[in-house]
Image 1 (cartoon, rainbow, N blue to C red):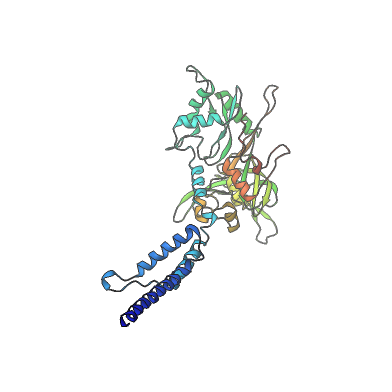
Image 2 (image 1 turned 90 degrees about the horizontal axis):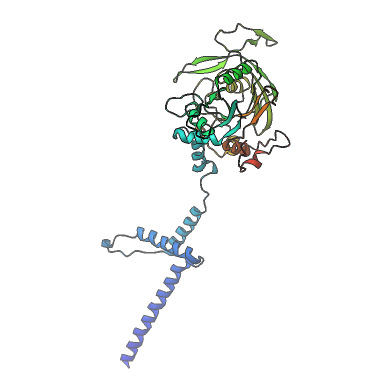
Length: 406
């Protein structure tokens, strides 16, 4: 009888021990009972790893203690971290890389590659002249260490003549464009045509219209800037030369009129006609028509005379120093950029239209150059959608449309 009681007591103790173990396991499992699928396995694995990391070393003789409340706290913390928003849209690396690529386009490729690109960009051609779409970042004249339009014109001429070995055709630049600008570039097929076009330009018979994206809105919305320009040295930590205004008038001391001042001999007459095509949000799309050919004329007139620098003009956005252009916060947000990335923003100066007068009974030559992709993207981001006439499409409509060459 005593042996039977003893055995019953042993079985009872074992049953109690098993029930305690089951209840302990359920309390450990409780924090994960609301998780489903692979999330539960991942959370359990992470929690066990974290708990194991806090456990004392085996040689200490203490057993690791896993508390369900600690594991539940870690799960909630990891869920909160997972739900935090990622980096802002303005810091997207793809946008910065895209702008860098525009800034270095075709500068270091093989000359034949550049010639093929120019061949595909021909907008107009006849027996006297050729008009091409100049890409961004490629100078027209020879430039040390980089490709230039002039250096590949012999190859381009042969391509346009069907690669004939004994072809005597040639192409010569007539009217220049700045390295960082884009648009319609006029080439002549011989020296006589060059002289004829230069004569037309001296008499203001060659019309060239440019489109620029301006930081600010010119007031009034249409006008004529007639202020001479001179080259000056800017002192400071980084001495450099920069074009600047050399006005012939100044305000009187009383502020009630203008007083003519002596003009400087080194100053060049500079006249630019402007017209605001579209504006909004503190920026504008402006059409410029220069009547003189002074270095950086349009950039100086926009930045200093009108106080509306061209977007991407890092040289004239600051009058007395060299630094990347500084844009207002609302404009940075629209462009999807941060101020530290503005240094890669290309100059938004595009030779939009070229008009040559008729020769010997022929019609005037009118060539319009499509906007480059980065220019269209900027117009869309800034919501500057402008139609030049009823037949033109807005930038949002033509962004993905392939360019039709003449």
